[in-house]
Image (cartoon, rainbow, N blue to C red; front, side, top):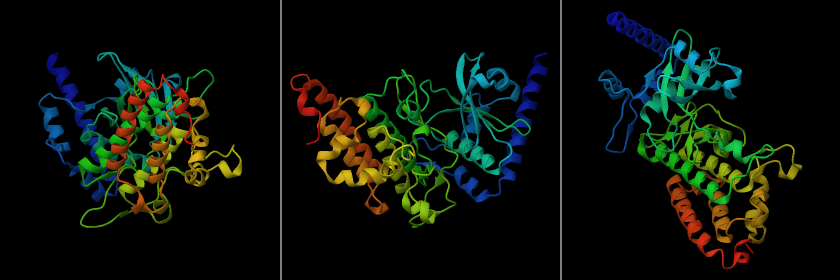
Length: 377
């Protein structure tokens, strides 16, 4: 009986491995896949897919191989009532692994699209390598037959977009301190991709809906399927198909397809502006001159007396004067039109760390004279 059980487990693993190999063969950009597998990290923990497989063979399972039946049970047959979200590559469901007593997010990829297959492979490879407090953790995957499913840790507070843009009635807006905490954590996640990975990993799809929040509003980057390896061998950029969300893409990438880590910095600046203003990057419901967030903000950056016009009204002026000015200065540097004029993400992290520390100090002093902190005049 026990032998039959283990044989069954082995046959399931062989089937999953066979399906994964087939998926890789179907993906024509084999050079890109090979480069992802050879990705290394500038740290003491040089992690490779092969090492993970070796650890898995020794019983230290880092990424679990699920059967489709297991995930059907976890999601109640992918019940629409368990649906967390839907995107261009598939649907995400909330699930419960009863035998682990673990709640997870289950992303079922669209089987009809080649791009979905590519995203599955890139994200599976990358998240098997990437381990950082501000990058979502991959629990496992499923490759049964034509199924392509990724299983992540569950983030109970959803996405930054859920708490920032078009809030439903009754949902409390994020306070200034939480917003800065989220911005700093997201920047640290990008810094890990840019500075620790060798070659650097360019996220390419940094936006509010891809920043997930745990129960304490700690942010984690998700959906790395569009990620691209950065330039090597003295090259200044990589040229690639233009993929991303309108409004978040840097000007040089949107116009030429030339991609660098500074492209991610621009996208970060756009999201940071959304965090500060509470406005969507593109909002066609606003007057024409205010529909594009970056275009609307550019002239306001030139007049300190108008800085408060950019603060989210939902904050009700509960922020420090210098905090708002510093945050807008960081955002303005990130969304410079010329890529070379933008800071590195490490510079952004340093600036935000100072801003967050300054927030803690000024909150302690704020009680004596609140009027000083409400405007940037």
